[in-house]
Image (cartoon, rainbow, N blue to C red):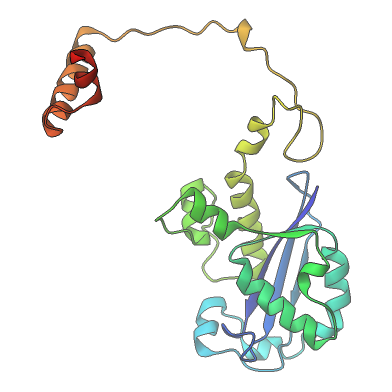
Length: 235
């Protein structure tokens, strides 16, 4: 399975309001492994970045003056992305900008070129409800080293997101062992015979049993004597 982790930097927050992509970074995963076949462009947006955006990505207007325009590299970008699953953090933002850029060069919507789009922000919100799920927060939570990320950069952020995605989905291979499939779509997983293992049974000691009984008593008091185990024993 070919997957592309994608990120963009932009002149501002509104594609419909005329903001443009200034950087696109893509990292390729093949069967969930980094291949090193990455794609990266700085782009001349033909307009200046908003001040707030400059504080986020630090890419100056002057630096972008001699960079290619999106129209000049659109074909190369689409060839690279074609038919892959695209992984994006907060996909609606990046896809909205890509759609607008493609519209300007007479191309159809972004999703018509790829096999699908996976939003890691939506995945993270489902897995960690009520928690911060920014890229930095996920790196901290999942043990991904983001110490080099002082400013946002499309290629660096795509590389970090690739690690985050692999960690978010790491359990998929284990869940598919019995079905003889692999989450990567590659080599068939091998069934493990657990009967060969003898697992020790550790019994609670007296102090642990006493602590357990005390906890049950406290729970029973807090519920007014309505705990299931009390009701069951008196039936």
